[in-house]
Image 1 (cartoon, protein in one colour):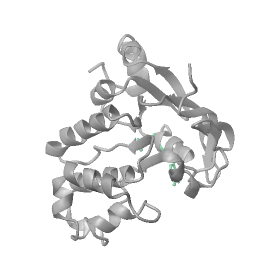
Image 2 (image 1 turned 180 degrees about the vertical axis):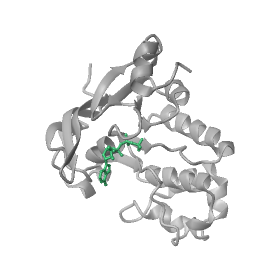
Image 3 (image 1 turned 90 degrees about the vertical axis):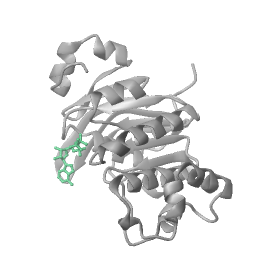
Length: 237
Ligand SMILES: Nc1ncnc2c1ncn2[C@@H]1O[C@H](COP(=O)(O)OP(=O)(O)OP(=O)(O)O)[C@@H](O)[C@H]1O
């Protein structure tokens, strides 16, 4: 079997002096969708930040497409083919939709990619010269995902993409994520909604207090309601 696209092996990390991660391992195969789950504060966002390099992994290793990136500067990582949509979206409200869309692209954006994304999102197309802050949360989330796709990543990392989004747009965002995955882009998704995560992901990793406590297919998690209850505090959906 070929090596996974992203491989995180036993990483630890601290924020300030507080140890936040002690032993997190996960891997994402080419074209796979992996759900990263866990209760609030277990370290999901910090794990993603370690992959992006904005929090340093103090132990363990991270590799992407066969290269060790554990100590690679954060600004070099997107260029390797990793798109990141942070929690809270990271949209600049005073910049226009077009400016936001082009922020992550170095040099001239690929016109085909931009056109395809705008065709997919007529709402963004219509608002290209409008300030991004005037759009709804759901539209800003679409913009954040479209921005991450502008660099044509091999892996898209999404941190709670439907958090705080009005219900009408939640389904639309989930359908879009499924479409992205179907197009062959690997997806690493932090998702609070267990049912949605189990429906989208082919593999799930569940964290507990700074470490990965479960890793396996959705069916294995579904088969163990006690574990789900202990790790996530909910029943099987
Ligand atoms: N900037 C910070 N300063 C201090 N502690 C922090 C900071 N960011 C995160 N932490 C702590 O690190 C731990 C892990 O946080 P993290 O955001 O990675 O968890 P999470 O699983 O993504 O949680 P959530 O689902 O609430 O987003 C938490 O206990 C949190 O309080």
